[in-house]
Image 1 (cartoon, rainbow, N blue to C red):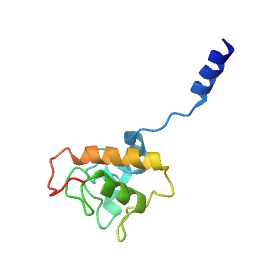
Image 2 (image 1 turned 60 degrees about the horizontal axis):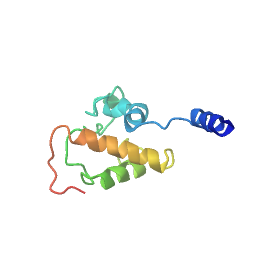
Image 3 (image 1 turned 45 degrees about the horizontal axis):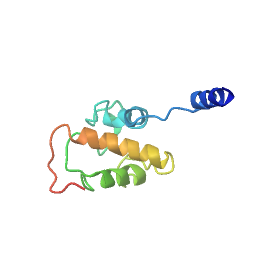
Image 4 (image 1 turned 180 degrees about the horizontal axis):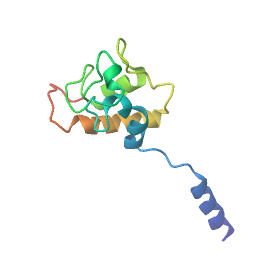
Length: 114
């Protein structure tokens, strides 16, 4: 019984990890907009404008790996920051998976899927 109580306490004290959607809402939607269409409240002040994440192809490719690279390293010459030192590897991957989901909304103009 004592073991079960300890296990229950440990489980309730663990902080719930954020989902890709929650990470996007916190870190990305101000520029990319709530639906990822590049029309967030901060977008008007940016040149170049934030990318519409629902349209592909992307600059570095359409697959998970190029999206993860962009989120991790940022994009030079744009307002896209690098999140590699801000988010954990797991959070970066969750965010990449969410952006990949957004990218599939309007079809694909990519030649390859990476």
